[in-house]
Image (cartoon, rainbow, N blue to C red; front, top):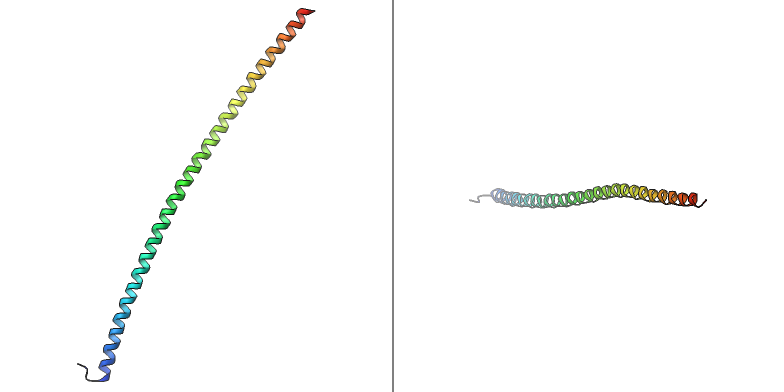
Length: 100
């Protein structure tokens, strides 16, 4: 089997190449596994950020709608107050006219 020192060298080199190949494949497997886990984490983070963005958008829409409704209500209250002020001033002016 080992007739010369060259045969021993070739066997050792072939074993070294086999071990190197095995460790290279193992390293590639671990790197791929690590990248896959990183991709899953990034996907999970994106889902959470999108959900938070939707919540903030909903809150923003509700605040805008509330502000619009509040503006309409404020206008209505102002009109009612103006109506009662005019009514009160008309009553005062009628009572003053009756006094003279």
